[in-house]
Image (cartoon, rainbow, N blue to C red; front, top):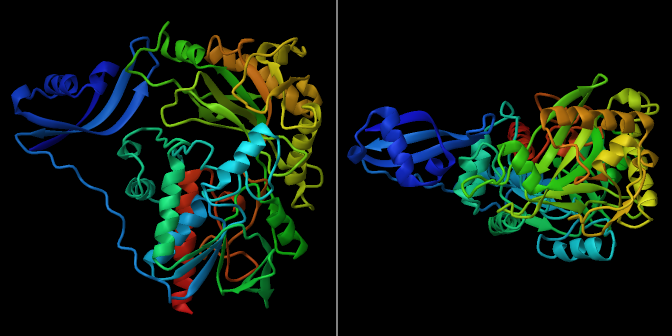
Length: 519
């Protein structure tokens, strides 16, 4: 027989199959000798009390053999000679849209401005070491999108948008660890995600789809308010009645293109702030309430949300045992982000700490759909100047930041291009700077010890989400004005993260195919 339980155990019991079986035996009143296997379905950490517990959802097999359910990929068909659908962008939205097109019997043609996932690494190295920004190949642009080299976090709150487990199972089918099906906050890791992305691309090509790298879209062709195809920087024209636009939150040239062509877009509020780095050991002590983390607990994350002067201020994209990375997409700007390797074994922890902005914060936002994007760009350019007109980041120790003091020295940082001691009030508008200053004091009330000069503030964290929304019909998913154009994923303002973007990509593909089948 098989029973299912919710059980709380110690970290050691959760990590040891025999000890876990003993705990389940006690919990369920089942004879230890009768339990053949305990299979963990879901796992989360409860560190609210000094005695840390692991919450588990388990299947308990009693006098019955355990057979592991294998995850298989769908039976993808060959679509080489099928009708074509153009997909602009090879991030999670674009890749999962392509896979869904193949499942449904249509040929995807992915147009990606950046390079393949392996070649892309050279440009990341040049950005980190030589401060050279390749506008088409960087942490945001290239195969896999922004998530490929910025952590591979898979947690999402967007469970009402679609089947999260379906996306996780597909990732496992392409080589991700099955642990992502179990963890409350699943994570692949920047060191492992690129191989998974490459395997997805190879399947798309082997099934007759096409992936065109280093091909920047410069025009979306429209006749009588209907899409007819796209034009590339190379001068090529690719015709199609359907275009899925999945270009990501940093594709400013696409937003500008749509605006020039009078294709409706809207300014969208987003969040902006800084990226703060602490010693991981300090975060562990605060969160786990102990002097030493111990071998059975992972490096601790944290999550804080506060209301400061009527604005939300919160931690974003927190990276335990992680690294801060330079994420500029054009020369003359500085942008930060963070990532962790799969083991989360680096000595520092970092997180974006951002505040909610409003449309009223942007000049003329009601008339200028690029107003939020221009606000974002201005701060990134100011940071470039304050950092020394390089990819060095303007920075302050955390307590110094809250007190308005320029730090006389700065700690070692994981940010490879380096940091420059600066008064960050020179980077941010006054309302952002003051909100952050007050907010960090409030953060310290929730995490005693968070506010310390062992921590260093890097500025800015500005690419939290798209500053533009490309409006679409809620039923057909087509653009409200242009038939056959499907705004998709983060760049269109309909997703936030790998999983929600992948779900949106699948849904756009389904709507696109449905329209073709009904025409």
